[in-house]
Image (cartoon, rainbow, N blue to C red; front, side):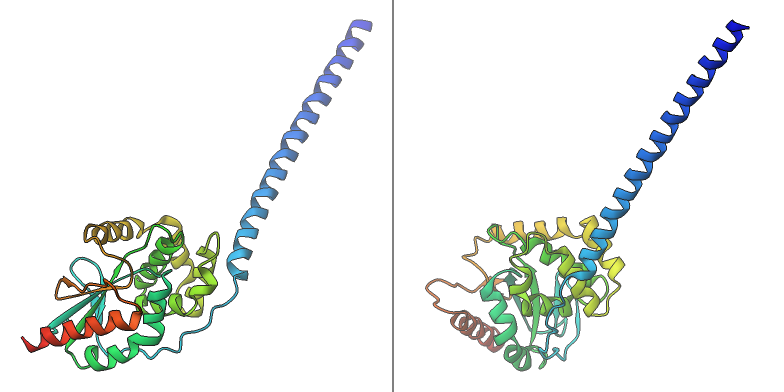
Length: 248
């Protein structure tokens, strides 16, 4: 009897130990699940809580839009006699100034008249840590037919997102403000869908040994920025090259 009683105590102790272990494991799993949920919720809150940007009031160019065979976004008549390519960096202040203060007049005079097809060629500079993500954001918006809307949104709000350690949440907020599918946009950004394309664009521009951004090419010929003291001077040279090309 004593042996049987001893075994009973041993079995009871073993069962109690097993239950404690099971409860500890279940508790640990629950804690991990709650932690994971907390992180997920925090990430979602960060995306949702990103401050809104200033909605662009830049006039929309009254011209067709599309993509070149190489995949670059353009506006203007596809068969226009002159093609102007802008090599630009979304984080570049000079590019921001051109986009927000100068481009509208050029668009009215040359693009909307059907004389120029204007192509945007991404050239993220190495010194700008958010230039590549911004170019990706524009292309992710382009997947939803809103490349130029995001282009304008990024330049208008350049000072807001430019200094951020990670601007993705801010870009998702912009996508929502523009009426895009936020989930699809965020998935595009998370997956790095267009990163290779942006980096290839950067490499192609590097091969041209451009002096900086913005730089323009007219019918494939780069317009020199050498000695230019302002964006206005760069644009004046580009306009002269356009007029010369139209006169031929």
